[in-house]
Image (tube, rainbow, N blue to C red; front, side, top):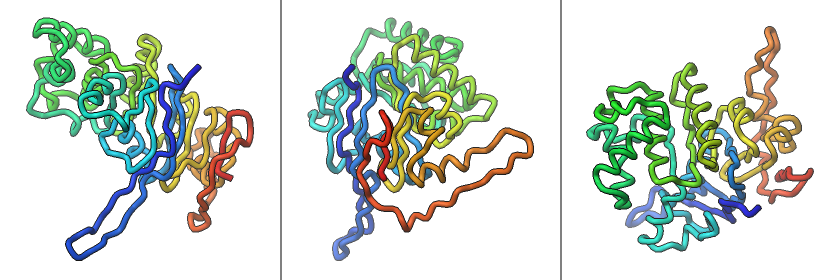
Length: 292
């Protein structure tokens, strides 16, 4: 089975402090990252804050222009597409942002927010777009009457469902889920995760699941990639990664997962970042790759 998403040697540099008489500095946020995602898979991307997870996800959609590399989605090179073709190609990959409030226009009603992708891509007439909006709201568990409300009138979980319905409006094949539940109350997180899993089964979706909640990643992801300082240090099936981590950083990261057993002491494994070296991934077990 061929990959639906294929990322090859992706690099993203940010330049800061530049001026007329200053050279400034360059920060490499994504450093030679390569991975592929199979159709119907939930591919997890984890790492601490600042590791480059979100930047990688946004580079996939060209919301941020990569410095170099190749991103192929459904065997089309996204980074080589001209603007007109890029807009059409983006129908196949959409994003659900971390903050369900700041990602929604507070001056627009929910119905207009959900229908906006249909308007941009000139799909359907007004009546057809209204019917599609009602269908999408119902699909994510919201009453169609929610269409007449504003984002500030909704709870965090409801707003995230609105963002999800907007992402589904164009029938994408791939969703980039950027910390989709981290801004929600714990009681609501499980509901949204279950909704995501249900929609994946019903619609045949492929997920790039960006998260820092490692317990959640273990529960929902089929494969997991670990990022550190913009580089992938380990990629493996979820069970193999959590049961037998190979890279020092992966072991340190997993040691931070809270234990549920009463009285069980959390034993953190320290990681000395000064000893980090840029190594290419190599296969240490079938399907298990690590930068060692």
